[in-house]
Length: 118
Length: 112
Image 1 (tube, one colour):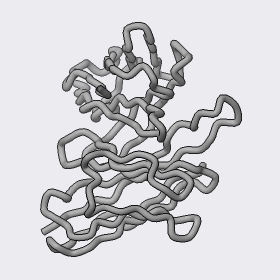
Image 2 (cartoon, one colour):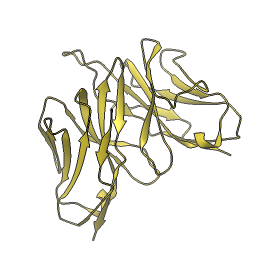
Image 3 (cartoon, rainbow over the protein chains, first blue to last red):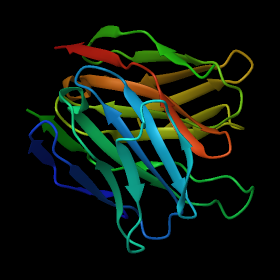
């Protein structure tokens, strides 16, 4: 069964450092997303990406965040200068196009990368 | 605004049915989902329903959607101790791009 894969599963970084979280979406999907879940809290939408550009972003997704699809298979989230409050589980997701109706398919989530900023 | 609400806790006895409820505010949702999350783990998609359906059954799981009241429920029949987890209700909206909005999660405790 196709799945979204994320690497690494756990990353520890020092405050102020840059981190790149990597995701391989399902191969024929066209929409890509990042979400985060701070420990004990709800899953929050960060950004959606389609046709090589951001289609929607939340107020959490400020200038320190960026996304990229560098090579047609990977989808990355970069955090430029990490802060302690960036510690969270980051989930990547992807969805495709339905054959009819013009709407996307359901979103498939990866297992997440736990980012710990120390 | 976009909001998904669900009760925070539910406790049931093993073998009973569990019903987890959720309400959402945005009527432009395309898909509605139930995800399961065990401690320290990722999101496991349990089931989903397309917004033009009103019921979906998948083995022990039954999803009911009342679009008029914007109410979604998940019924787990014959609840087992392994069902203890947090259950997230979520909806996917299309607002120029797709995004999924999650509820805060319902923690299900199953007593043996």
